[in-house]
Each structure stands twice: as structure tokens, then as C-alpha cells.
Image 1 (cartoon, rainbow, N blue to C red):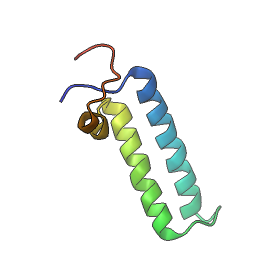
Image 2 (cartoon, rainbow, N blue to C red):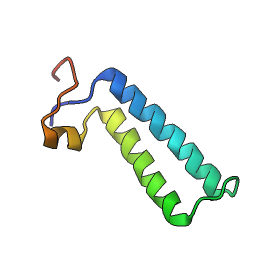
Image 3 (cartoon, helix red, strand yellow):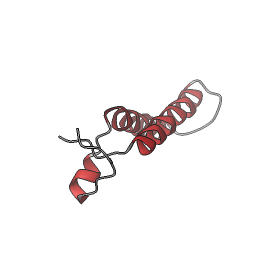
Image 4 (cartoon, helix red, strand yellow):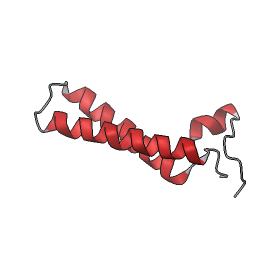
Length: 73
């Protein structure tokens, strides 16, 4: 599968994923109050964002035919 996420978008996804993971960790440790199901969902979303940003491949972009990567690999 070719890369379809540009470098800026990839960095933004990784940063958002890390931030969401930190908020989720704070919630799990009891610093904030968020329901458990929200914690699990947020952790899954954070993992997906970090993986998509790291690999620069997005399955939703692929399904919609979007290509934001300026250079083919």
C-alpha cells in the first residue's frame, strides 16, 4: 500500500495521538473523571492516530481515494 498521508498531516496525527493518550492515561490514573468506555475508545483512537501518522498510511483516505502525500514511495 502506498503512502497517502503527507508529512505535515502525519506529524499532526502523531501529536494528536500522543496528546489523546496522555489525557486517557490521566483519566485512567484518576486525575480526571471520564467513563471507562470512553477511556477504552480514546485509547484505541490514540493508537490508530499514532500508527497512521508513523506509517503515513490511512485506510479511510485509501477508501475515499484521497492522496495527500506529495512524493510516491
